[in-house]
Image (cartoon, rainbow, N blue to C red):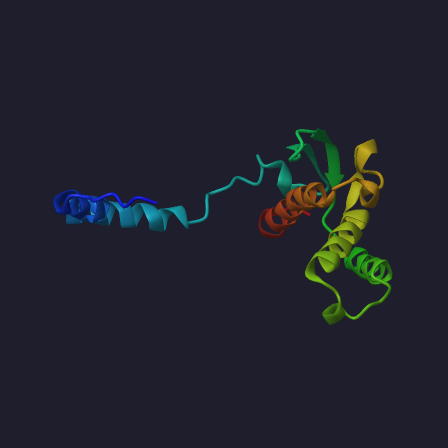
Amino acid sequence: MPVTKVNPEELKQRLTPTHLAEAVSTAELKAQADEAVMADKPVEVDPDKDPRAKNPYTFQFEWEDTRGKKWSGSFTTHFPTPMDLVKSGVMQARMTGSTAKDSLDALTDEIAFIVSRLSYCLDKRPEWFKDPMSIIDGVPLIQAIYGKVVDFEQFFREHGQA
């Protein structure tokens, strides 16, 4: 392969990190820091106007998988009771054949956990989600639905109206 010679001045210009040399005033840096800190502050919410503050909670779900298939429907979930959590734990153990957790790979444990939780928290679901364990390549879909349920549970725990 032939070697291309580069002019030393052009090489210096190519290797100069100009994006780091941009002059930024102290005031601009302070404003950027203030903005970054404000981004971490919790957003003020009005529980009276947010449907996640009510139990049960119905949400619309729309999602597209990597092959372009669209999944949509209405789900209703409720905040789990202690008995829901116990039954979910028993179901999870049965799904994994009561295999010790440290003997399971993380994905198998996560699938069993999520499906068992959804089995006891989802009160209504679309027909296509009646048996989530039979959905081809369904793990990302199951995780996306569980993400919505967890979002509700976290919101309800902080702002819920029993």
